[in-house]
Length: 236
Image 1 (cartoon, one colour):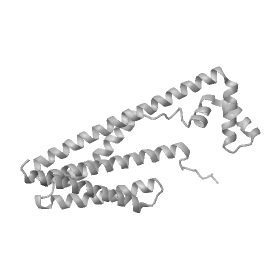
Image 2 (cartoon, one colour; image 1 turned 180 degrees about the vertical axis):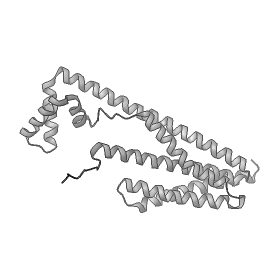
Image 3 (cartoon, helix red, strand yellow; image 1 turned 90 degrees about the horizontal axis):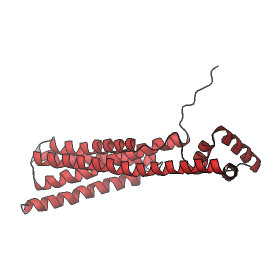
Image 4 (tube, helix red, strand yellow; image 1 turned 180 degrees about the horizontal axis):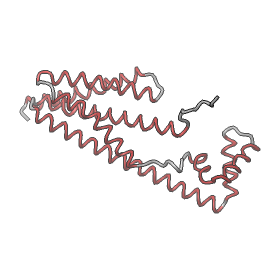
């Protein structure tokens, strides 16, 4: 008999994957709400398809580039901090190995190991790869899987773009009389989906997340439509 294979992800790999999925869902959600607010606001002022398309595309590009740039800067800062922490740990291991061994023993003991077992485990981990052991136990960093700012930037760009395409297409494709209702229904349905997905990724109940999403999106579209209608009425 062959032993069954176990494919389940554990620890940092699973946490990292969930973080990426959650960021993608939130990026798509931002794209939906912000672009819907723009095109619905413009629809309140004019029925021109070209104006709606121009405004929607401008909002999509501006939002996706802003999201990508912000994520790149944020994750670059995080990566710089990780690299600096690893460099400091490497220096400490070189200059004071016994103190670092004692520190690792204490950390393992705080995780529930007995003093003797913690000391033995610390010695074995240090002999195998001291820097990796301290990075994972002390710093919570996987030196083989540092955060990548380019991956984060592209993920945010794509997630926002995918989300923004829904209200953009919903407002420009239907006939004039159907543009607003089709857009509102499509956006609210998408917000139900993103709210439910984000709640499930966070292992929380979906009701409150869905309600927050739908109310927030409806409020954004209502405010921008009112503003657009007011500006259109006074001929601005």
